[in-house]
Length: 597
Image 1 (cartoon, rainbow, N blue to C red):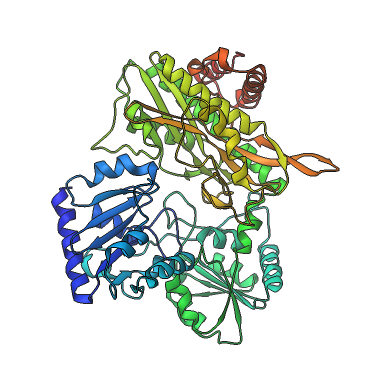
Image 2 (cartoon, one colour):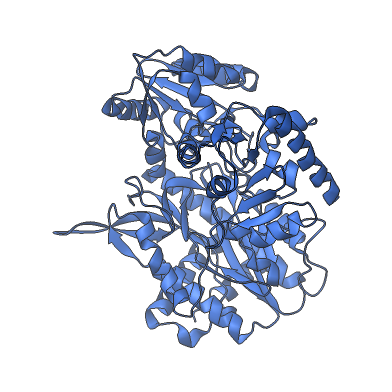
């Protein structure tokens, strides 16, 4: 699309700002559920700016337009925004203030900053208002300026809601609600508002297709001690699903009715709200109702997978690994004989997964990035811009699948042609970091961010670093990114980040050389009991992901005996569990790639 289209849209927004007497407008990348992947209805930031990354916030004033995004997207933002008049603001760079600090420094007293409160978390609203109030700048959240200039705004998504059924559904709705209500009682709350879609899907054992890659549906829930209300488009629920909800004591209401329901609670009721997972635009409808702020209880409950769920995840990992064997066997046999592009890789991996038991859809948009494209951690190939896989270099593939029995997320890097000594050095450092975290034994309850240096030390030792976290929580046939744990030293530690048995987390250190190559090696791991002593309980990681790690990029003499032993043992396990599931070229590829070092 021509860059003039986006500059014209920015000018139209400035016209709406002038009419509303707004000095600045913040366009968020969020919806009323603070989802990671947004339905088209809430992709106003992309529509206005042309930036297609999943994380970024646009700020527009009368004479400035800037997009704040983190280091994962700096290069992409520079490319997407070129010629639009929107400036890339490199969030996290020491020379770049946060967007709210920039506004506080730039705008005069009595200025007005507009943003749509339906997409602004209670927590962020409080932080921004505090900073702006100190400079006598108003933050206005009840006026959606973007909707005034977006004539062809997509409607709300409409996909059917369906039950997640046994044997894959391993918990009863009644038990989930009982656990949530117990937490409500401990907080002294009579009601609990839930807007995060994965929490709602988990509590009610329901799944949907309203959000790309995440099997969830648009809804809010209001859980009382004796009453449960689900706010979603009733037309998405067929008679059988409605019957199940009725048996569980859940009443179904229209999606837009959550506001009036909150308004009826009154000032004698206490409402439990997660300030990081509910928006000020939704919560403000509760008026004078007393707020109790805490993490959604379901965040902790669903993060700790039970034994039955973990057993299903192991099966899903076997299916996923077998699909990847089929893909990589095809890739190596085809490379050099016909044209393969980054887009081809995405298509072939999805085709391979689609043949496996329980597969539903990808769990995120596949990242297939060759050479310099791999230096952008969240690179996405398009028809207009993609690489052909040819010559010498490194190919990074980050992909995943949604299965009825689990969610997968894996990154592998493979050589094309002959890897250079520098590429082997970087690859080996990343592998050493991944193995170090895989081998960790740690106290139960340790905050997840404190484990991060284990993976980074080998990378730091060669004077390198990476800008993303090392590990994120993963759902059970739910969001590929979930909380509350996060293995990243940049994440502020809070009381809910403790590591506990059953949590599934990614292990994905990386190293990126801008303009050259990117390396990331990722497995999923689950917390398991390791030991108990007079010093307490200790946990270890069980590696769940099953796919060979390419040894052709390793500078083998730089591995310790312990690291070599770990890799050989991992490959032996991969071969044992995947060999019965593959045949022909895929089986031969598996055997070749799991040979001992």
